[in-house]
Image (cartoon, rainbow, N blue to C red; front, side, top):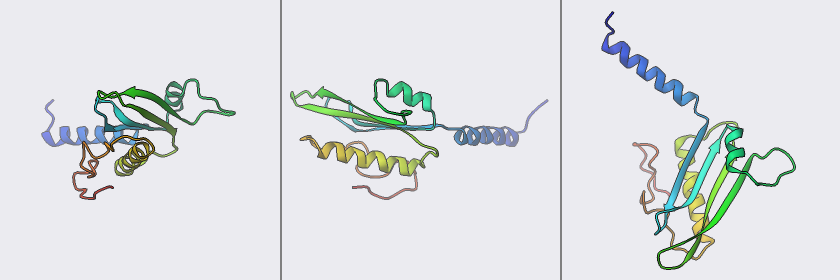
Length: 139
């Protein structure tokens, strides 16, 4: 039995849409430092077990629905920088554009609170990458 190319394309598109609809997590990094580590990592998820994995050791009265994990890293010039990972629960994932804007602004906040040259435009020059049609510049 031979399938038509149209049917194969339709099945592939349907599988892609189903996979996207079942997504439970968005994660990303931004702000490459001189030692190539990202300044900020953001994980937004509907998967509470993933939060438990990332947030081991966090203290809370009730269930842990998010955390901030910080560690210090050294740059080639000897400067120390605090890199941060934010993990949080959500009942509905943000769009790719909204997630990228959140990640970008968190990167600026992390850079501003330290005496580090802001690396948040190194990879994207301040332009949204989540949508090929997006021409908006973030600051």
